[in-house]
Image (tube, rainbow, N blue to C red):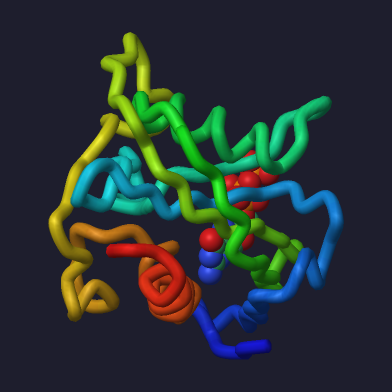
Length: 157
Ligand code: GTP
């Protein structure tokens, strides 16, 4: 279990165990790989981030992850791997999010990308992402650092 603070000084707990905080988390975050690049989305307010969002009524977290990737990037998930879960003790509420690694086999142009401007492909996530204003706050705590480390260890990247 890792414990750290996000950029808003909210306490974050991250674990790579099997659903340590909730069997049915309401949020998902999907670290996507298309060919030899990372696939992100450009959120209209927050900036560049891996796709994700809220699980809808009647869907599982895994289904929500696949849907969010499609909506925000046009990416079709060919492989979805659960990585871990994190919990943020926010000022107003506690949120619990599943983290996934997804392989994308095709990118299809969408009529709308919802609250984002659509897909962005990057060869590398910059070393100084935490200080880079193009990136969303979601990319600026140690969830990204530890999750990428974990993904790189167990996948050929
Ligand atoms: P609604 O108003 O209910 O639609 O949601 P919201 O816009 O308040 O956002 P959400 O429920 O997704 O998140 C609430 C708060 O939790 C955010 O303002 C953030 O402070 C925090 N939060 C959400 N997702 C993340 C995340 O991935 N990482 C971190 N560190 N904080 C997050």
